[in-house]
Length: 253
Ligand code: PGA
Image (cartoon, rainbow, N blue to C red; front, side, top):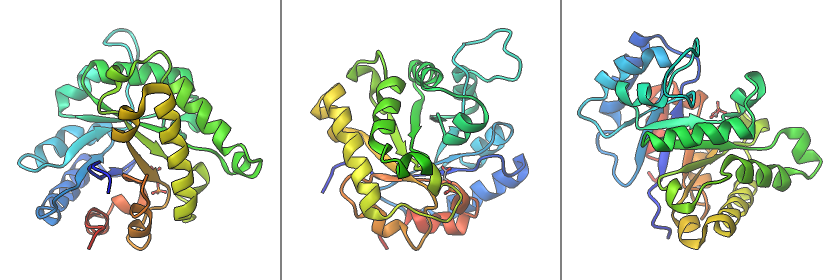
């Protein structure tokens, strides 16, 4: 058994107004009150962060953002800094989600700067990587993951990265209803952990949590979580409904 505490994280993407998000967070708080041995994080959209932070008061559910910009402040219209996220109550931030890479031009280099900004503000980065369907079909999965990890974590030392969470999200499994089989997930997670071991040492690799993301649902979560290198889930669609998401939190039951 690994000593890593599982993390079940919800990425609400561009869904819910402030009021809707606060209501869902309040419901979730009640539903997961009895949860033990698991960490929970939800990442609403920026405009809902303040209301959700208020709704989560008195619970252990962590608040995350879905993105940040690496500069502290300045003339960067439309951007939000790590300090602003801390100020509103965030402890986590999703970085390099495939939708950001695909639709908003994020690169491994920008992801690297964002991880740096998150860590220097004491935010826990949830660093997303994953191959597209075409890359998997061309047998490039491992080379893609290798590059994303090396470039995304370039110039860090292991002691800089404490708390880092990695999320393996095969792009072909996101929002498609196609989940990686537990063997495919395990194989990718094992590859990532061993690469992290090469780059940052065994102690770091043993401690780092690697979440799986891509159509995680109540009926597949248990099988995925049984795999030795799967330490949690980053969940989109199934995190929007508090009842469904709470079933993921109680994956052991
Ligand atoms: P999904 O999204 O669970 O809806 O597939 C996962 C994600 O994008 O993090």
